[in-house]
Length: 217
Image 1 (cartoon, rainbow, N blue to C red):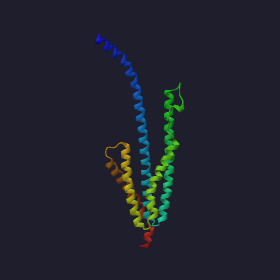
Image 2 (tube, rainbow, N blue to C red):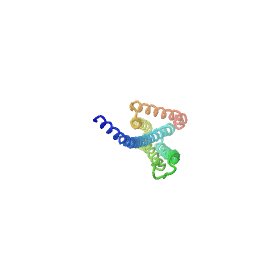
Image 3 (cartoon, rainbow, N blue to C red):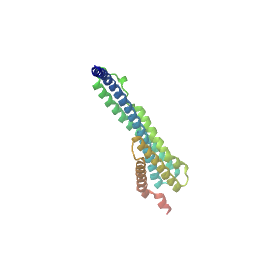
């Protein structure tokens, strides 16, 4: 009798356990999706700042290879930062809008009878565009400050390289952390070395156009 009673309890309790498990699974999936989406946004912001930093620093060094004038460098860097931010915003808007359309179509195909756009959380292309532009500008400000404030030309170039190197290392480490890398220091080193190559190539390719120093010589 005791064995029969235990078997009945197992049979009665079993459906209850199976009924609760899908809810837990759904909650876990929802939580995981939120964490992944948040990490993607943070990583995109870090990468946007990295793009703004490196492209503006390389542009400033390229102009500095040809012109000694401080304001020429600063204005060229500012123009590049604004153009880059607009380009990033447009690209992000188009990309996220496409992603939104795909997700909405996929959800509609799976839930045709009870479809409602209010039931799902879709990516916002306007917020994505604004965040991308802001991230790019935030990175661009780092090399723009020494370009505008340091008077001596040689010292200005050195300070831009040093400041950009430190910022690239920080952003490389942060990007690795947000991306879940186990070796953030190695990732930071890769970003720094890549940044040095980009700045060196830009400076070297534009240096032959330095006619001002040729005239002085």
